[in-house]
Structure formats: C-alpha cells, structure tokens
Image 1 (cartoon, rainbow, N blue to C red):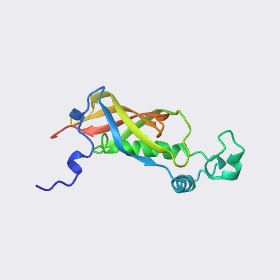
Image 2 (image 1 turned 180 degrees about the horizontal axis):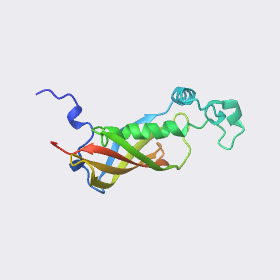
Image 3 (image 1 turned 135 degrees about the horizontal axis):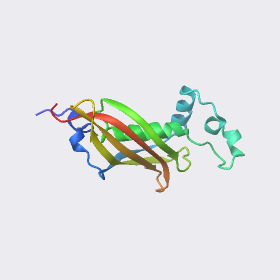
Image 4 (image 1 turned 90 degrees about the horizontal axis):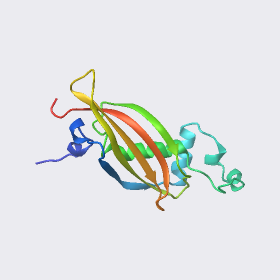
Length: 156
C-alpha cells in the first residue's frame, strides 16, 4: 500500500471532540531573516521589527518579531493536526500577544477543541472552534488565538 500523507492531514468533523488537545510538532526557531522578510513583504516597516539601532534604546533593547508572523506561524503549525481538510477558514478572534518574541526564539504550539457543531445550512459539513496557544523555548506563553473552520463530515 502507498501512503501519500493526505490521509493524516487534518480531520473530519467526527474526529474532533471538545477538550481534545493537539500538541503541534515540530517547533520553529524564528530567525532574523524570517522576521525581516515577513515585515518587508507585508509592508510593515515599523522600526520595532526592522531597526536594531532604534530598538537599542527601546524597553526591550532589541528587535521584536512581527506579531503577524507569530500568528501566521501558529496557525500554520496547527493545520496538519486540525484544519488540513478545511473547506474554509471562517473566523479568527480573541488574538492576544501574551509576551514578546525575539530573533532566535523557538515557538511551540498546541490547540484545544472548544466546540464542534454541524452546519445549519449543509448536512455534509460542520464547524470546529479551537483555541491555539504558543509558547517559547522557556515555556513562556507568547500568543493565544481562537478560530473557526469548516470541515467535511466523513464519507459525505
């Protein structure tokens, strides 16, 4: 038998139960290049993210990683375990930056299923509501976010 990885990429509605926790692996060490490239590609030229000289006089004393990069990274880390079969991402909410992220930090994440429900308009799918939490290599929480995504039911 040949396995191509798709069978384990995300889940069907029936695979999710409130209280389930997915620990996403591997983590990702954020490099200076990751942060600068993301900031410049997204047109975020805030000196907090790209100007080491400016940040030397800031309360943190060094460049902060762009928060949108951390959000993108955590959502991306969660896809294999959660929304890999998604029909659509529906909503992102309650995003909090719980602590600073710096070049060289390694981000790890986990997602907890908060709610699962069938779609009211289509019987072949449903909505999964999760909270993802990220922490750095020291175990300090740096990000929390919630999102809803639409997934198919099994065999429909």
